[in-house]
Length: 154
Figure 1 (cartoon, rainbow, N blue to C red):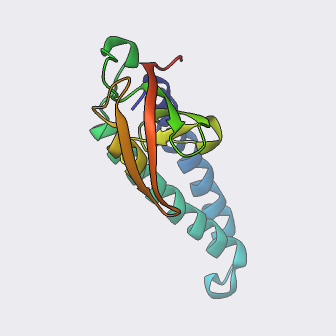
Figure 2: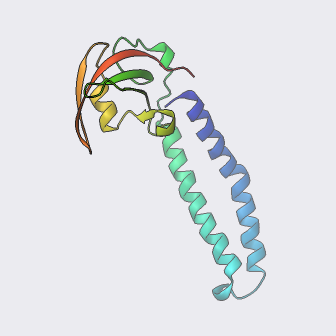
């Protein structure tokens, strides 16, 4: 995981624990005062929101606790690895495509950032400039040549 993602998730976790928990507890207390809990929509909505928030806190606590923060600039990028930006040339039509290999939490296809656990990234890991790689995609097998490999820009 990138340091920026780790910091973002840590801040979200801290906010949920220190601010959101208190706000939801207050909303539940106010809703309790409205009377019969069986037919109290505000109470049930607040309890549902509390349950979702507590699940998110558990997820974030696990993610942050197990996170391995990696600085891509500290890695050698002769071979494709986490944090590599890779330019590929499609062997069928000579079109070029660029991907950056990141953690699952950072993946964003609109930026060209793919998860290191994705089939595409797994096929690319360990390759170097000039290598050919065959990747099984939903649309069929595709062959690419690795045009360049460099550390991602943050």
